[in-house]
Image (cartoon, rainbow, N blue to C red):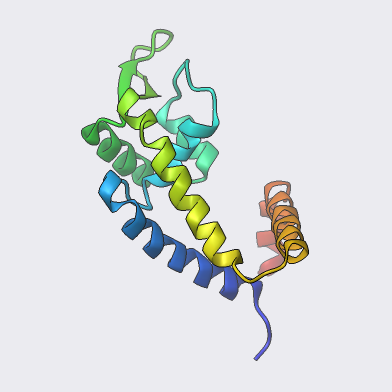
Length: 152
């Protein structure tokens, strides 16, 4: 069987989702909500962010974004305010309760990384991260319209 990066990444992704749903259950966070919380943990969001901008940044469709944001609002991890510049739009903010989840989330993500890299030497781990980062960089700088045209 020919080696496939997509197949291996897909397997890791699915197992990651299962792990996250179990590991974050006590914090009432699902794997589908996690990217949204991570955005707030990793970015300065003191000015808030629109749901549309959040969706675009995370490359997640608007319907899935709406469901995740609504769930996080209901749980009290996010809050929504009218945008002063555009009263038709809302800005989303992380709440104190949401901020309190940072430590739990970071610990669970670290545990997953430790599990996956257990038994690998430091050079292999560094190489793996370097290669994955290069692949992500390629994906983020690729003109997808040309890729899709060439695939037809």
